[in-house]
Image (cartoon, rainbow, N blue to C red; front, side):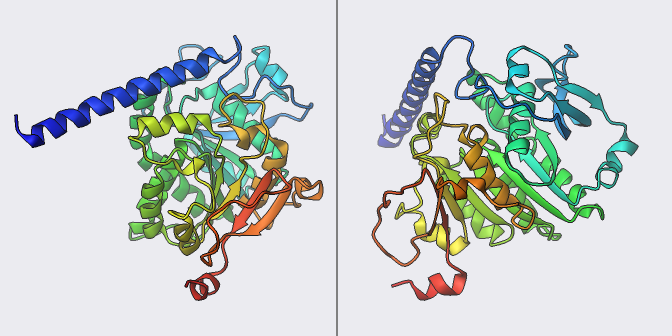
Length: 383
């Protein structure tokens, strides 16, 4: 047997061992989750009473045979549009009270943004292992907690909502890029809309970034109205993100929400061949810090932010202080400001672009926002 054949066999055995280990770790996390609770979801925690949230849903999921769930995790041949109204609190979710769902006719979908005076539109792309109901209720929490005026749009791709369907979900992501691009361009082309932002979570960050990269290299480019992208706990190879940003450039602006205690991303690193996941990378990691500076990437470090979740993977939707910060990142001109900053929950620091120590300085606040200097400033600071 030649050395090349032995190496190929060794790589395949290594991949099998890594995947088996990842399955065992996931199983252990599930075993540690209280019966009836969702893995890291935090949805069991009661929320204060609030008004219902109305959102536009655009999805390439197949309709569900159960009218209460509206859409399944299977892939559809086309894209459907619907209006969804979400019940006020997480207690409604725990009690099994469904959201209201109404499919939209093509003419109604075309006129949606004008009819709702949607000057600002936030498109949310959910992550792995998210069924339609979880995607809707989690986004509703974001809408309530962000304290920002915008029209919410959920792009829900076909996830089966199971930890055992990782590769199915990943392939669903690959098959959803054109649908997301068409949605973003349609929103940006609507004269009623003045500004668009994208909030992507976990594996949805791969979908969002690949879609925007494709737009950036096309003749039409990235629409001017698409100004800000926030990637929360992005399940994305750091090196791949760097290459994507090479093509995207500085428009739109990109903000990362990272946490080094994210257990879901630790498991994903095993699945991904040992490569670092973007959402578990510290802002002062010397391997990527200069790239963040050069690309104008901001980093919100929430490693010290306590959460009720098991995996620390859903801080972006579970923690009110962070939601207020994200509202200001998505629509800076529309946000009333972060109440969290007034209570000492947030500290702002410049990203270490000047070749200083590669270490994370202890912070008195659980949320640390790192913004890069303007291009001329950090270029001049390079040794």
